[in-house]
Length: 563
Figure 1 (cartoon, rainbow, N blue to C red):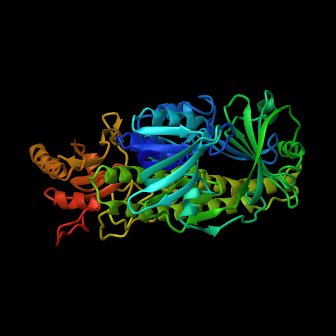
Figure 2: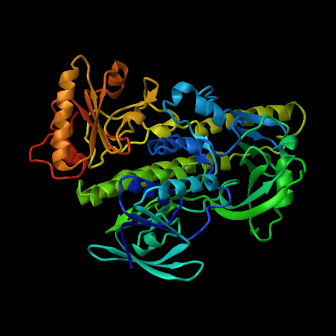
Figure 3: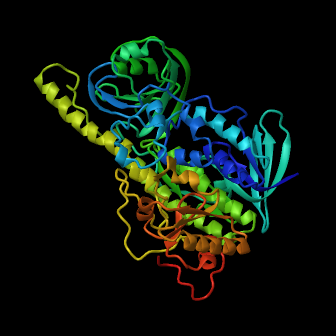
């Protein structure tokens, strides 16, 4: 029998990021992952700005940025009649070299993305080995590859997991204070807890609505056949064969996605003619692998926990991949839950803190899956005239109109700073309330705000992002104004209160008037996940506010719901 504080079932991005958040705080955890090797088939090919910020928090964003397409390969999205044919519209996205040195922002626009980490394009199969490496550097993390959980049971003070090794059949029993199911859409943990998905499943569309087939292949000549400026995604939009081509490494690896027709099965379909039809020309390639998958899901679990069991990632929500938010929402789940589990295990927060996980993340699950569904509807239901790829004035006019519609769509799907950076936890029990109404939540427009519940806004301070100056756990952002001595005295008072409560708190003194205006208060309490817990004036009740943020008992009569 093995024992640990947190058992994590599933070692994909959610499970590994959860282990990293626990490991950096010295919390014992065991990750049970049935696959010994990391994935070798492409999926989840877009890393959001917010996920890159989380990787930056833990110090390995540069390692992730080094993965994927070759440094100078554009990460554009292009729509064509056929992939080798006429270009209808293009959305320009910086290469990873340009994103790293911030030399170009493409069609994003620099002012629209106030973040130190622009979105990045790289396959999950490249990212997972880095996440495994990062998790294994912590002594408190035990990564058990090749182990599959078979049963999960709960008692009042513990959970018990029975597991077996998928190669040698060895049996193991693991007990833990908590278990987290990061084990995908068929989650054992979710099913054991009796938690169901709600929402829409298998919605029918002309594209991205039904049985899909992904073809992973290599080709030395495909870029020449395409005959246009390179891109990350190429969409074939015609009345004969629609399809999506994704550049994997910018050299010779590609993924092609088609939707199967009614009556077709992954085993029976001949994908080669479909590929050539979408391309508009034959080309030489070497098949690596094929994999079926289902598009058309908009599902969120009815609950994110039961007793000592929690779910995260695909176990909690299931997306159609438009917008690329499935894997990214999973990472955000893990970050949110990770610091809270650590706080409870280490004793500086009430167990009620864990109730805020569902309160904060379930609304985000609904928000993000709804966006993905709207984008699938937008591209999947678009009607393509039969003459779109013909010669002549009529066809040219058809292409102009279609190109305009696709231009609007691509901006709605990929230029989404509001969706990635504007998430907030309004109404959370561990977030202070302010009387003014929040700004509208707009996927394509991000308005920086330090309103409680929001992601802390980014600003450069002496060449560093303010994020790089925050502490690992809570940070009191203390603006000095004209009285640094008074600010330091107030900061010391907060640190004394935190020390008396056992709450890890660092104080960041800042004399930037621009940052002060951006954050809108003299004092700002920043959570470990870089969301705002509270903001207000000097002299506030430090002990009471820290108690609120940790779900500990607040003294009677405390007024904590106003800035």
